Length: 243
Figure 1 (cartoon, rainbow, N blue to C red):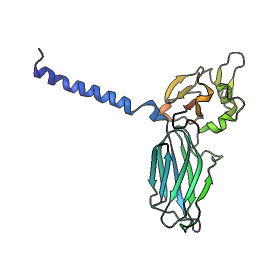
Figure 2 (figure 1 turned 30 degrees about the vertical axis):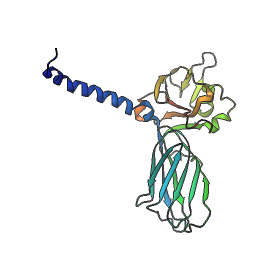
Figure 3 (figure 1 turned 180 degrees about the vertical axis):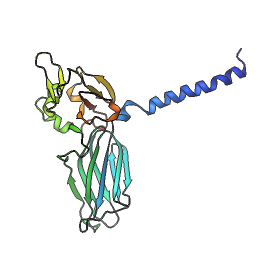
Figure 4 (figure 1 turned 30 degrees about the horizontal axis):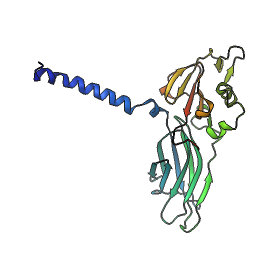
């Protein structure tokens, strides 16, 4: 029969095991493949920033919100890869909605200089977001959301689609091996819903893909150091089904 002293000696080990299991649940692979939306709210007449404005995203049953700081900045995070609408309000000012904002894994999408006009009785302003032509982070990235993916004639072949969106990728027509910027065959990794896969084929139905991001340079630190690159693929969740 175990004594109370023996049981007490095992408590620290049991606590450490429980902590490890909880950590694995909280720090799931999916948590490392989320993005964010950052922006700034200003007054159109003067360009001055507007602190205290409410910025909200409603996504499924989730509501993510922030209030602009003294410099008019806001940050909405963490966000799963997908398409969002940001609503900006301030007492006495016209409501603004910025639609079709694409969020990609491990990227910050910026919507700077959202202008709020004085007059709350005015109709809401609806703005369609457009991705900037220049990536200010310095990363060599190409991204594709589901809306664009569905219009591509190569969507049935994921590898061929990858070469269509990134000039840094080439497929050997005989072996189907893929090369990243002249590196060795298959010297790259896939990150599929946060799970790492080294080279090869992704084996994902094209109908299940929500977004693809290709890193040919400036690879985020959590993916490691590769001479090739990283391909991040997010699949459709139940929140995005039918979108």
